[in-house]
Amino acid sequence: MNKNNPTQKPVYVTQPYLPPLEEFIPYLEQIWENKWLTNNGPFHQQLEQALCEYLGVEHLALFANGTLALVTALQALRITGEVITTPYSFVATAHSLLWNGLTPVFVDIDPLTCNLDPDKIEQAITPHTTAIMPVHCYGNPCNVERIQQIADTYGLKVIYDAAHAFGVTYKGESLLKHGDLSVLSFHATKVYNTFEGGAIVCPDAKTKQRIDYLKNFGFADEVTVMAPGINGKMSEVNAAFGLLQLKHIDAAINRRRQIATLYESALVDVKGVVCMPEPAETYRTASYFPVFITEEYPLTRDELYKKLKVHNIYARRYFYPLISDMPMYRGMDSASEVKLPNAKIVAGQVICLPIYPDLQEKQVIEITNLIRF
View 1 (tube, rainbow, N blue to C red):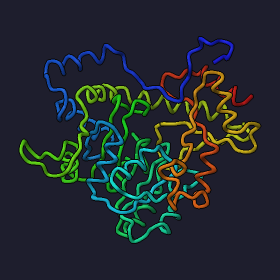
View 2: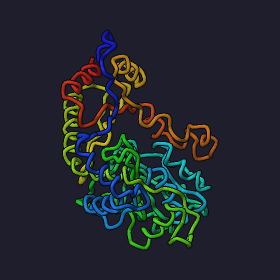
View 3: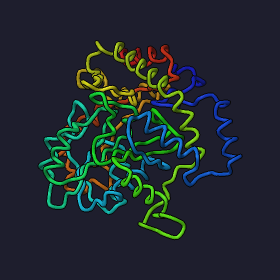
View 4: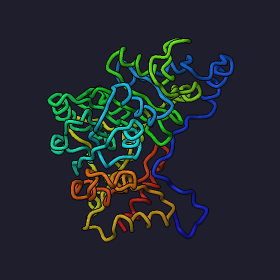
């Protein structure tokens, strides 16, 4: 982390947890022996069941990645017209809407949670609105009760982008149980990963069956195609790695939470650096560690970002710029900065610090010392 030592290994905002290689070899040998590489193989089936048990949900459909899962979730619920969503997220959230020929309608966020502000949702509803797609940002639960109340009043579907919410519980139950569907990402940077992967949490077996058709070109059997599906299947290698990851996930989450506590303790008295507290009745998995750089801090957010980078610390500005500021979206009426004041402010303040199980305490201390000056 010393700028005078160019051989110092960079520290990134996140790095995937990799169990010992020797633990993965037996899974690969089994795949070779089975000669079943994809298409709902034995490891795929085992992982779906194992994840249901671990996450406390009844039905789950695996995907090759989270973006395909988002695209398919919208297809499964036959969403049309306009979908209310957040400008403060990774671009895949809004891209999945465009891929389905839908119109994103951006609504401002609550600056404390970084989630969609329910008070702004209702005023954005038009006769063309058919769904709401909120994001549990950084694993913070959206106001699921208010959002569901609004959806019920106006006859809307709710699809949660739960890419950050693996293992998160709210009021003692899995956060993934809320909404019509919840979509997970198992990308290599996530708390739980399958190299690449994703999943849709489904409320019932009938919905899961439709989703399973859609992720496999719409095939119901060898000669029957039920819908214009896509190739979204997870391979056996990814599923096998997911099974191995599950054996270590609790230890990985506990370590991430310990690191988050170290950061909070070291930064609690630094003026102009605001950490995000864990919401009441919530158990987060420390998927990210965002801090917000306010005017009281001697550097701007971008100046701090550059300072860390000089010392080989590659923090990230998640999420900057806003989705609504990107060329394919900024011409939309709902993308106006005037309508998204909180999102604009937060996007200019946020910086996510490195957090992953292999991060050492001495590295956390070095990072926080740089922030403290």
